[in-house]
Amino acid sequence: MNFQDFFNPDRVVDLSFFNFENAITACYYADKDLRVKKVNKNFRGFFPVLGNVKDAYFPDILKQLGVTDEQIQLFENEIHNKGSVLIPKVKIIIDDKERLFSLLSTKTKNSDFEYLNGIQGQFVDRTNEHELTKQRDSLIEGQLKDKQIIEEKSKKLESLATRLAKYLSPQIYKNIFEEEKDQGVSHRRKNLTVFFSDIVSFTDLTDKMEPEKLALIINSYLSEMSTIAIKHGGTIDKFIGDALMVFFGDPETLGETDDALKCIEMAIDMQERVKELQTHWRGLGAVEGISVRMGISNGFCTVGNFGSDLRLDYTILGSPVNLAARLQSMAEIDDMLVDENTKNLISTEVETEFFQEFTPKGFVRPIGVFKVKKLKSHKQDKIRLSHKGKRVEINVTDSSDIRAAIEELKSIQEAYEKQLDKQD
Image 1: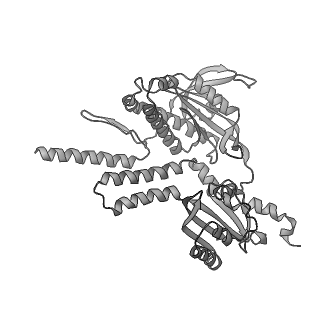
Image 2: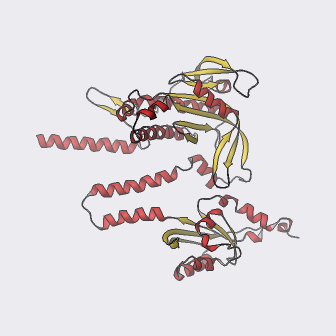
Image 3: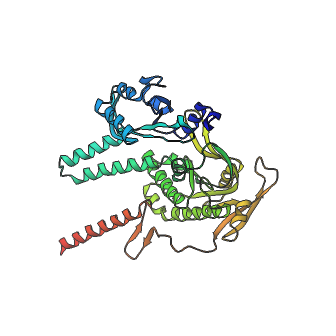
């Protein structure tokens, strides 16, 4: 009896397909004879006209979708002769509208389970990207004189790519698509440091400001805070209106002490950045500026995918989450509070001050709460994002691309030099 005979073939195929079940692309798995054995939800959602495709011949599926004979022939030749195929542009009509997909497929090999020797592939929807590219190419080919229009279209394409990349926190993206560890267990208990922040009197701000200006301010604030969180290795859990939740210790950890220190360093950098941007935000309409409260706690949380069949969030649950939110609400304006666990982890590197002792809901004993004062030693490699001289004041309002800010300063310098040349 062979090793594979001890296992249920369908179950093994299901497990091998696990990473693709909730993928944002339309994925399929076929046997070596190109008979489809498994598709994910997005495959059925993208192509509802196909119905049940189990055991269907994949080239026949392509034919039914309207893929050209030349591309079907290319698929069969490449997959049989080279073991993989990439067709960058596959046009498919869905609901009377043409959409553009890339089709990627490769042979899978497994010496232990012969029924895993087949073809695995996916359709990637490139329609929006292709439409923007066509618009940009059309402007270039038309040799339009207005260079600004071309730059705006290119920036729009870059902005789209940036937004798409931020749907997942970088650490989560890496964990899903690059890590080789077993993904079979979707939930686990881990010691995490949890951070909450919230803008003081944000409701009053929303009542006083126009929606457009409010959006500029809140997006600027969250963008800057997110940039700092990612720089320090934090996993951005979610935005809740103006509130921000970040945790340290999953999917990557430096150890509970260093995770806690990273969180504190992040929070202090956020406080400094908020101070630097006050003039900018007042100019946008926040007359009294923006003040932020912060709360940090440490403890064991359950981490993993939570939600419904229609939507999942990679998030954390547990009393440290509730405690961090409570500490944030207790903090004074522009202050940061930490619980006793966090204080003990950071005590050698961070100066703290006792704030009070209280018993949170669900806790059996009171816990100590401490106010973070400052780091005992300061790092010297932080880039200053503001400058005030005798005649010029500079404030970088978007720190996500410092080199782009430098180029903008150079262009300003060149513009002034041209004006001076004209006066001479």
